[in-house]
Length: 286
Ligand code: ATP
Image (cartoon, rainbow, N blue to C red; front, side, top):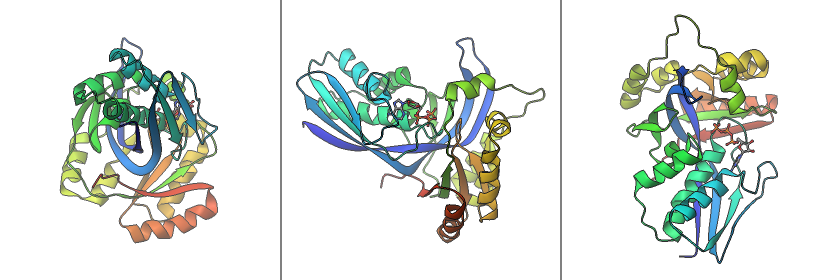
């Protein structure tokens, strides 16, 4: 096999608890991550030498700064591969959105090159390399929904839950994940959102209660700075969402709807108010 095309889905955080700071400078997290069907398409092709990254998007780096490049370089170095690879990224996931677009591209490259070079690396080996590229990459390599702890790399997969009907709105600005975490302050008497209650509702497929459990501590940094995030959240609820939340470090915001019909109605309303609105659902492979 010389070339392969693979999907790289975005994720949203249904819960994101920031439990504290760590000695390594990262934050201790407890988060429920969920893949959605907003997808980058990654084409990889084995070549005689070197790594090149190209994209239809001018918004991402094409050289060593691209996470897909870093994933390829790591995998090829660890496995003594002398050949090269061309990577083309068809970018659909908004950049710098809190949707893990870069991490998902990196995960897709690890999976694709494992096949293209017939390495037969086990999942835990790919997970290790993924964690070295970025904290969200291990999740992107695994199950569609997971509880993640640590920096986000300690994963407990969750069973397949209900298919969520979502609208996603991307404001006109990006935020830096590192800056959001730097600005985060833990409050006295901090109470993390209840992941156990969420998991119970997830297992029973109770969409209304799932929506009522969603929570993101990083909103306390991003909303005071960017009031638009709050406007989007309110507009989504007024358009019919059961609840709405910023994803990850933002600024993308999603709304959870009781059913597809309500989501489609709301799409019409939200498209009149915002430029980048996406109707998406959960990403389930088959
Ligand atoms: P996360 O939620 O994992 O922090 P994000 O969704 O906030 O990620 P990304 O879209 O992954 O953010 O992009 C963050 C930065 O990473 C961008 O500003 C971009 O310069 C850089 N980057 C490197 N490689 C990629 C890639 N393949 N796709 C998108 N961004 C990339």
